[in-house]
Each structure stands twice: as C-alpha cells, then as structure tokens.
Image (tube, rainbow, N blue to C red; front, side, top):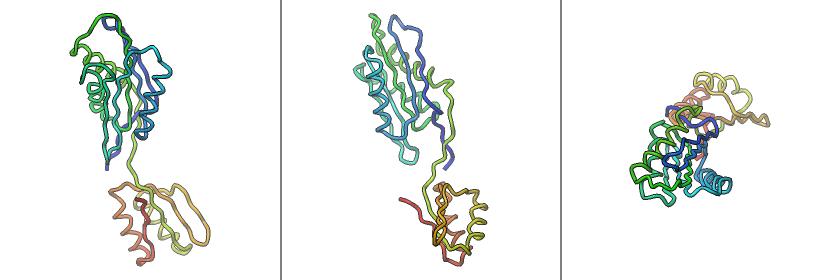
Length: 202
C-alpha cells in the first residue's frame, strides 16, 4: 500500500470577517476517533464564545472512516464542505474544526458552505504534511546461528528491526507493509529451511 499524507502538526488560521461573521479554522493530525472528539471538545473549552464548532475528520486508510458535523448550522452547509477539503488534499487521520461567531447578517446556505469550505481550504493550503506508511507489527524469533540468514532476508526487503531482544533466542520486532508480509514470511522460511515463521499481529 502506498504511503499516505497527514498533517505534520497543529495549524490554525482566522479568516477575514464575512458579513460580520468571524471564522477561525483549526486542524490537527489525529490517530483515532477518540483523539478527534477530544480535539473538538478542547476547542469548545478554549474558545467558549463561538456559536458553532463545525468539524469533519477522515481516519484510517485500510478501514476508512469519515464524520462531519454542522453543529447547528443548516444541514450540509458546514461539515460536508470541510470534509470535501480534507479529501481534496488527500489527507488522512486529520480533524478540521471551523469556529464561527455570528456577525448579525445571515449568509444563506450557499454563503455558509462557501465560508466553511473556504476556511478549511485556507487552513490546509499551506499546512506542512508528512508521509505515513501503513504497516503491520511483526516479530521473528530465531536461534543465534540463524542471525546472518535473517539479516540477509531483512536487507533484501529493505527492513530494519524496531527493537531487538537477545535472550535464549533472538527476537526482532518489525513494522512490515501489509503487501510485503507474505513475501517476507516466504523468504524467511526458504532461507532457514522452514525453521522460521513470521509472527504477525492481528
């Protein structure tokens, strides 16, 4: 599976007022739904004066999950436009929250959608991103005489152990791309005459 993009860190941007309404957009990389919800609640605590905390998030990549909330604005005018901007940037594991302070003049449904989508687009436009590769946690346990064979297989697959435990046997912890698991397991078995098996966490 190819790498995917997420934010490098938190970003925020306040837009120029639109017909008196103030819009302030915040974005954060999040690992799961709990972190996304916590981000929204954090902004509710820190920015108590806002009238709306509209948001969207896009999580996972193998098991993609999205959510958007209009938080009291007319249906489809806030959360969905925010989510579209996250998707347009090709970002995953990201939550964007746009706060609005009502300025006294109604914007209409079209105006709201443009404002919320525009705020999300602006905060994400220059946000630093990083590439993340999906991997699966795996382990190899082997006797010391097999060390050279195992190291050769790992070099062939461009893998470095994340951790090593040298006890009665050697245990190496790995992060393996899902598409490489089968080939790595086969290579280890072939190199050691079937003595070694790759242990992959579910």
